[in-house]
Length: 351
Image 1: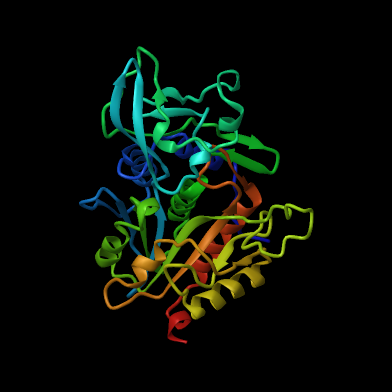
Image 2: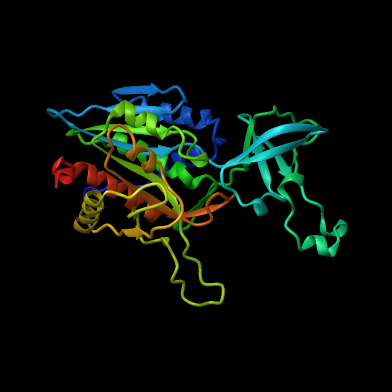
């Protein structure tokens, strides 16, 4: 493969910085500042909408350039402090889709100061045997920040950062969708000159695709691509049999959507991305239809309708303290979109 972009130390360091933030839905300011710092030298226009999303425009240098929107969301799942019980203990409510079984015993960080605490759980020495076998009710859990800790009602928190490079993989919280944010930033730095590249770094996707329509109304794109991270259900069957129910797998490249719970992806764009991948020798896979959605669903229904497609980086254990993603899948996703933008023209959607 020639004329490809690489994932080097600078790209990994940026992803680490993004993943280490506390950017839970409703308070994405820390992520937003990193985005603003990264794009300011490359953008022709930067705008914050009323909700706080970052809208970036890179003007085309050709006559009547095609307007193309790329979208990724800045927020992550986590929790919100709702009540102080005294002596450093705080009640909380989850934000986004998190399995309540993950909370007990986990280190967490709260607020923009990243105060570290723990969601405590009774030790087995003090717990009845029948109680040990039960799932701990989420409403009974507390965040313990210690006697010196201080949090405000409404502050967000999430799992403690644990970004690690492990051979071919990266392990971290918030891969969904900080890896999409990192890819959009890299594409801006290598934007083709024949299109008008419109980037939307969105808010509150994890609580219902909120805010995605406003960027499409602002940009009025001719087509849009939503970039996200999708769960890889590629673990072995519990009985050791072959897994025939996977939706994506690690190591097989970017996942091109066919449909999801929020949108039917445009067949013209599906075929275009497939051709681009085949011609460049980029591995790819089709994300099998099922639950879960992306901002493409909201963008598709904006204005008079927008042709959309979603592309995701597969990762294991999403919405947990430690997701796993392959660096090669990240690189292949970046290059599929990079080459697609270079080759894009209006004939793709006029066909």
